[in-house]
Image 1 (tube, rainbow, N blue to C red):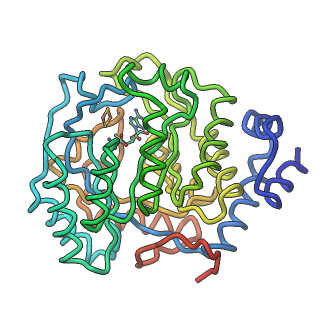
Image 2: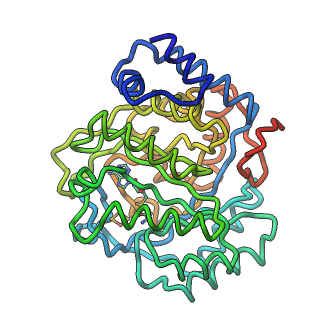
Length: 348
Ligand code: SAM
Ligand code: FES
């Protein structure tokens, strides 16, 4: 198996059987971690990129079985930020060093193309040196195009699971893996830097499903890859399922770094939720992005995708200070720049 890790580091690929064996075993985690860290330093040095996360609406028309802000959760207290409130988050983030703002929300029809385009262009006008990333789910090709023209350059849309049968176990029948994938290829074709990914340890997930996820990512070749453990939410149909493990998430982060050396890969909040050292461990295992929360404190505890979500009480500045300390303690440094993907692989 040690040879398998070396082979993955050298060739960036393995056959399905080798990949499955690597995913299923824990004995080579340390070797995987060391190789992943080596690769990440070759491409990105010790830089960790920060993205200011603005959770601007928790209204959602979808009913994903795992998600705490699903339409069917009548106990969720709903909120929407106004355009001015969103801009105020950017005003707070810019002096803290943010050069990327990520607007994330449920699929909220209130934010139609006009409304969202106005917000995107207002941010780009005020902060021309910053990138705007959207993460607002599945929309039409035309909608993605308008938003791109308004100045959004990046889009995060996890494929969640590449296997249509597994997808059907996580979502109602009106949603499909096929449409999710179509959206991702539309975004790419338009010219966005695209991020995809999946949850680790979702109900019914098999090792074979994870191999399919990696194969789909190879086909898509995204610039950003977000993975994090599934974390249980008590007011969803998956309330009775256990959360995914930090251990498997870290192993997969290392495998992803070796398969996709240039990818921007976050150490996610969900990883920090299932383990107190999750985000530091994530950085040591190959991740190179952190996404501190810039949302106003009054809405933080309403954007609850899962139980026990961390960072819901802190002011933005506290969130950044805490993450800065964590990044340093893990042996890296926060970079104040837009943090674009380095396809040429040249270290800074
Ligand atoms: N509506 C947009 C979308 O569908 O991409 C963005 C918001 S959605 C809440 C962002 C991500 O949260 C999803 O892609 C999913 O992977 C993750 N997520 C949702 N529920 C989760 C849970 N219970 N545990 C961990 N991650 C979860
Ligand atoms: Fe829509 Fe989770 S179900 S954001």
